[in-house]
Image (tube, rainbow, N blue to C red; front, top):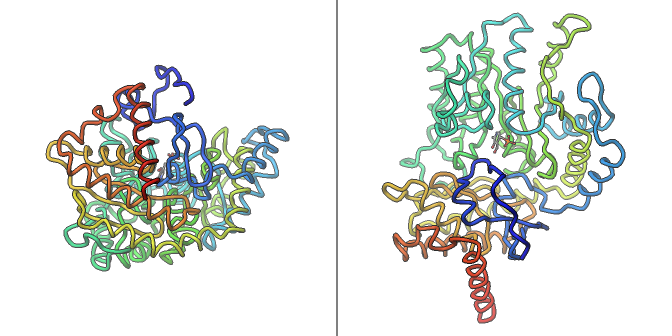
Length: 477
Ligand SMILES: Cc1ncc(COP(=O)(O)O)c(C=O)c1O
């Protein structure tokens, strides 16, 4: 057991800080598909970190590449100067992108990628002589990070309401989840896609003028809001509507990029090519912060052709755009994807993953199960008056049983590394099943997190107890 650090000073993001600090869940190491907690327990990673560790933890190739880069060139100014690895990383990423999206702008995160994409879209219309095309459309329950642009087009109320008025000139289309019609659908819902997409056209025609819309931004598959899938035909229809009205289509592929659906990007999976793709996360396997925005060559060319000679074509960028160390990590990650064909691996596992995920149907609390590629969302019945409590308690129980899952509201989201093995997939879902059954049996008492893990001593004692139980179970199995 490593020492517990002083917990006072660090303000954790998207975390109930008081609750967390009363029972900290700290990791000290990670290798392959497992984390090790500071109390030396192994946790199977059912979430690839935060959707980012696609190639599994502790990849030596990335570590070596990053360490070498740090010793050779730790930093180069990103503005008016650069370094060769930036161009190499851009070239390699362009080759990995769907055809045509081969001009790359680097950022430091998914949030920065989303805001960069929105700014490029607005500036593109301005530079091509259409400055009145200045409205942005996002989607309900969309997540595009936490910067002001991202939360404006994003559609998660909790992420918006505390932060003032946001951007003007933003509208949203309806999300695609329809549990009444599609509960327990395996893969994509079959019906309703065209009608839902047509609402976009209807909305911009009724409430705006389509000629004022700069861009529509959507996640091809909504991840953070709880795995919301696009019905068949929906994304293709959005593409057609955007084409008809001269609107740029942005796919936020921060989660779906790099093999998550069994193809390089979701764009490849759906056969729909947007004008702009944002990515981050698995671009460096989560090892170093980095994001990127890929744009169609025409867009880049328009900036080059129409901006005053010698002037900066896009007044935008970050100190850490194309950071040398991040580029080294990205190149090593792209090498891993090329040699290990992780997209194909994910595709090969997806049927098994789907079967095992849907085996939870009928268990207590389970209201819907959704899946695509190596992603599953398990929506739970909320306990009246206690939204989120069922999922949080399930998450804690899984944690105690050695499996890391993720939850948002009352939805569990599973997205393991693409290096996951079949028996590990089985273990993730059987653990969730066990947690749900236990929770139902315990009733109200099972929902009280403090009952499980009140403070450090209790936490450690509890972990030891669980560990012992597991040893006994393993021994008797
Ligand atoms: C679709 C999407 N866009 C943007 C982001 C924000 O990425 P970051 O947290 O790296 O800023 C996320 C993060 O989960 C995401 O899922």
